[in-house]
Length: 466
View 1 (cartoon, rainbow, N blue to C red):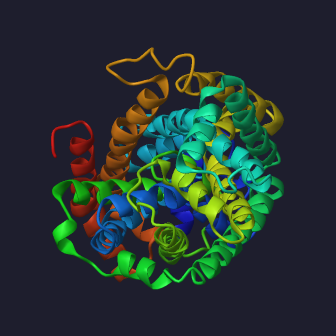
View 2 (view 1 turned 30 degrees about the vertical axis):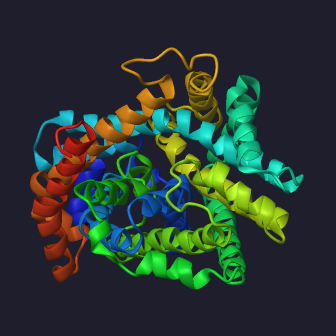
């Protein structure tokens, strides 16, 4: 059965690109785990998770988030990687091949197209924020935070985002590094990068946790994160946790599907994806343990919002012993996280161009990077020369963020849940998840629980709920 199914997939896929047999695979299971975890571990884990935890009361929100990861995030991550591995092509052709296998309309390939486009759009504004992180490596390293007041730090950040040239330069640095890695290919580029940066990120994070233990407020940070007070939860908190569980795993951006297409059939899909989900969640929790003790030790507000990383923490770095070193390590770590995610956002478009158009990775990567760079200028200018030009009160940056996060990604995730749960044949999904108990549980969640959760996030995001 396995041999016949594989042959049918190859035949279907060949109509849309190169033979699946010619596709490179990850060298090892661990290489895929590190790459996929790197895709998931980004600014969302280290920048967003701590501040939304602070805004929503701490421990109760963390428990809610973990619950949502298990019921929404992991099943959908399995679905996306499954599509990539079984289709063995870039997202559009993988979806087309599996639609043909299932005997349904080829228009399901639109879901793959959306993944490629989403990664392109996301990276165009993601690299702007990543550029801020890289610039702060040098700011922290030169001691600019030392002794600075909150107003000083706020003004410093304001000058950075208000300078279109500086912001463009730092964003371009991120894009150049990302492009150089992606152009080198799966083994020489992606694998080498993630097998260096991910362990480095984890080491830096643990060093920062070690420092947090010396602040005298580590117990307070642990209590804040893991002692639940359910009275602090609201209906909005539930939807925020649900939404972040969905987005923190880098779902529906094309990257996981593309990475899955490089995954060999001999790798256990269920165990591997579960490992990725656990590692991604651990990084978010460890980031909180590194950040909150520092925040409490300096009498700062844990619910400081998006400015927690770029304004609030630098205040602490400027006041505490060894703050210059700690700040430097923190922003190196944040930049590593941003780069591993940026790679996965660029790879789907490059993968598609090399397969569909026959371009070399150099040409495909250069074309993709050029398009992303031009589009990124709109996000750069949103904080300075275009800040007064808005659409329904939203800047260009806000519009891209809103469209991708609130509309495109939830709908794409919903489509993948429906496709794998209701359209793909049960025998096909069983071949990808041969463990009977795992398959039964996953199939129940992806058919009935995950779609409802995604729909709740979507309706909340567009203002129907909440």
